[in-house]
Length: 334
Figure 1 (cartoon, rainbow, N blue to C red):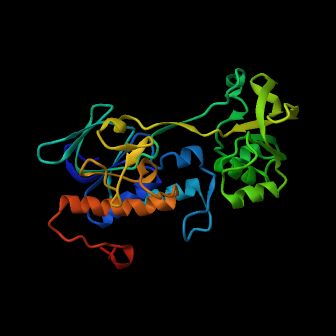
Figure 2: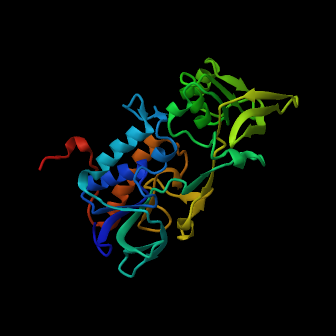
Figure 3: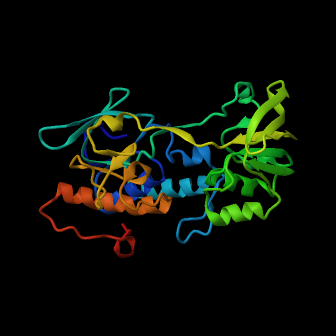
């Protein structure tokens, strides 16, 4: 554990996938690097919300679970031994007279750094709860807002409420495991990736649109029957279920960084092509970064991280010409 009064070249706030790859690249550039993560573990929300979700949109990796991807990213990030601080949320930022930044955490710890790279994702995410008065009594039972282990649903009758990418992906993943999978969505057109939607519709998943969950009934904290309502006809149908998965998105709270004086855009932080915010020396990558034509993919964040690191290096050493570096010409030997 490093002394918190050490001055780092780069402090990355956020230890999710993008923050981890950014730390690796920062190490390649021989930048003294620190990661600060508010959760008690690295990996961010992927291993917490989607450990078994299969990720297929990273070049060169045909498919990989969220948990395995996280393990590999952590191993890669530790290549150059960055300092790691867990369980702290950076609440305050102050730029000192010498141009360095002092970051203060919620526990009073202070961290000093020449540059900051924000990789906090959307900040704190809380699942949007099912808007029914009886829903809360089943949350400790078989009403789920995410899937931690697919095996828990083997042989069960599962209803999924939602129509985004995650809901569709879960329907496809569970289709071969559960006894029966049904999905209700309030609209007739799905906003998700076309190939995934087509796969779901061509499988055995019972897709009901435009439907919503209308009422839950059960006993001893477990749902046994769900009434679903057709929004066009008003028709109500009762389904016998063993589990309900609600995927209605997240409530987003960016947190204290929103008050650090940076230009904001639609609840995120505006950056330019160098991932630079309106505060010199502070950069943003991943979901929190907002710029024209941004693509919300992990692979996109993996590109933004090195750009931000290069920009941070140039900020620290503006008199030196910036040369780009990639692992194929880097000597990892001792």
